[in-house]
Length: 138
Image 1 (spheres, rainbow, N blue to C red):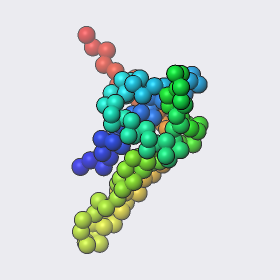
Image 2 (cartoon, rainbow, N blue to C red):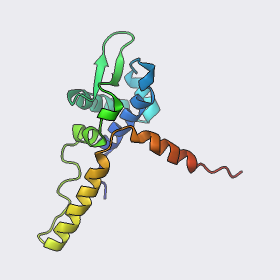
Image 3 (cartoon, rainbow, N blue to C red):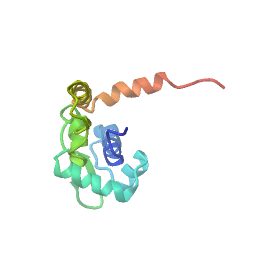
Image 4 (cartoon, rainbow, N blue to C red):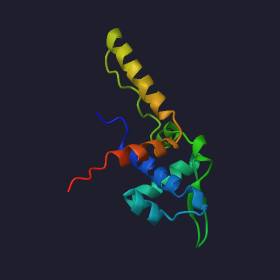
């Protein structure tokens, strides 16, 4: 069961790339974001437009232009990124009138919403987790 579509996943990947370069204070070109995020360029252009409309990224025109985060990372929530590209994400999971199952899916949805309500600075936590899982076996 996929709760987040490819578009949502790629949107998170694009924001991760911009977050990784946030302190450089220079815009990243679409081509570079696509390469670093392993995102199809044509798909990324649509995603960046949605993220721009939502005020999550801003574009800079010109030869040295590209995209940057529109606000500090601690103000950008994962849920805002997902909702920018797929507003109906994580809703309508329950397909029954059974009150027990409705309650179960409601709690499930609250758990997902709670997790996604965290700022993108959570990437730092997951970077540490990823490093701790590196296998050094030869």
